[in-house]
Length: 84
Image (tube, rainbow, N blue to C red; front, side, top):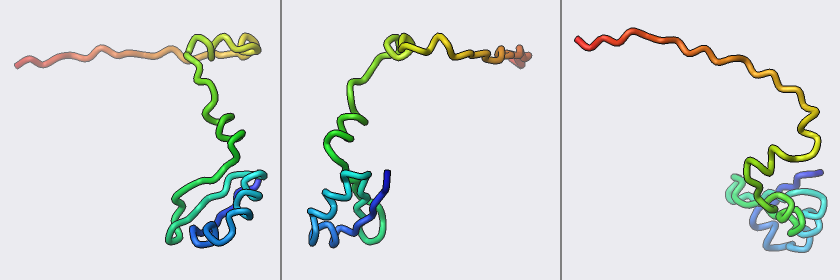
């Protein structure tokens, strides 16, 4: 995936170039030298913003049972309270 950068002026002058570049990766549009927008294909947009899953669906994905997870136990210390 290649990232292309175009100024807003370049975009206005050659939209077809920007659309072609978006087929191979995101196109960053700059305004006064600073990134302001990103152009991408609609299929890439759908892939990135696709169906949102809830936590239960995400944890029930195939293949997750093979991942070993050994979290460290949290140590919670009790501290004295000064009510004077």
